[in-house]
Image (cartoon, rainbow, N blue to C red; front, side, top):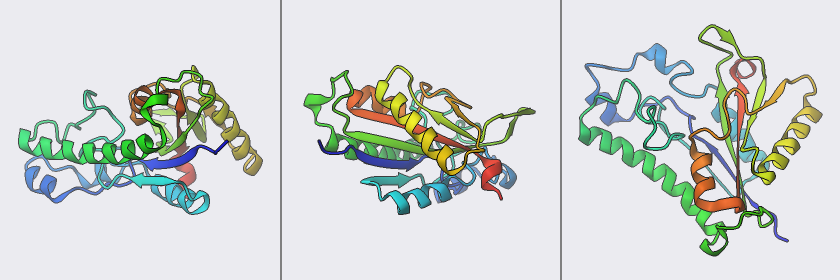
Length: 223
């Protein structure tokens, strides 16, 4: 049986701002210190993403070009955090342009997954015909709202999906073989079932798709 295709993405890779946002938000500009913080992007995630792409040579990979404070590539268009507090009040035509960026990113990913998972097998619930494994690379701030996160790495997945649970265990074992001292937690600091790119792809492509997010503590990435 042919091995599943591997896809690696990085939704919060950059804190860059498109020119049209710079022009439109002069009165409510995003402060430089906010852009440079974990609120602007996933610090260090792009470096991890790039290294994994070089080592694993996935069948498909892509990363976001702009800050999550422009529009969040890892959220559905109905999410309250889809637009940030800096962009939610911008004119509708500017927001439409921002949404186009999101749609192009999503379309590119879904086009690849669609090429590997034909419509006739998308309703499979067994997971025995796994076609795509997706790893989303993220990072998290060590301290949020004064509370220290007690993990070095988080593996996010949907526990009700056997293929994802199995892959999570394999990832944890592989990481521990290389770095036994790392504290790894499942579905931490966020739940793998929460709104995001992986949850959308699960709904669209069924059990032939397995999506996991790897969350890395930024204190490990700033050394």
